Image (cartoon, rainbow, N blue to C red):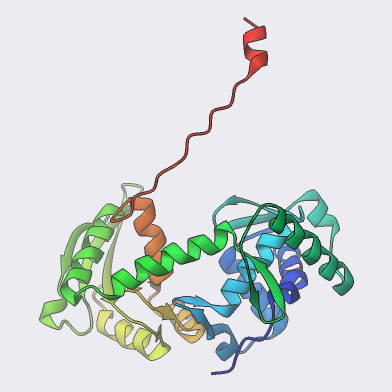
Length: 286
């Protein structure tokens, strides 16, 4: 496996350039794809795993975004949507000396807040909320990987029903040509789409041949396909899923599934801390 060798601080400028190229805003996936193009990364570099279901590219891009946010160059309105700030719009790049100064200053800030630190290569990394998110996702994905095949199929069935699918059936036990289930999703209460799905507990990466085999099994039987896995998808698999002229297949990897289960509160309990703010000026206006 060809390793991904860019450190997170070496991704500051590619990430900034990606945002400018995307018009000032973009999702994690859009930024990642743009960085891949800008750095001419190979599929092997892109697919290099850091740990669990997270690639080194995705992991280090997350840290790059985290630091650029702390610098006031980008902001996020949602978990996966980012945009350049006014300062970011004026900033095209950060030189190496400036980058080193930034890392020292931010590391000092983290130390003052009693954050834990660890070394990755020659780079100092402070433990952050983003790393904690990766940790809970890894824990949940490990549980999903340990489920029995029929239990995972039932979970997928429940998951799709919670998302609004109707007539969801599990057909995996019938060895239905690689199709584990089917259902119907109605958009806007008007348009209905027949969807077939495959759900597999993988520990590694799903490759493009698996996507092609699934598409072959679903031909003439559905409008769309959905492939759910506890593993990851190679870049070739992602390209094959959305290949022009072929029936489209949507992909949900382990991290995506973990996030969806959290949002739906399926096997995941999220406790939010209440924050109370007093507004003295309100009382003065009575």
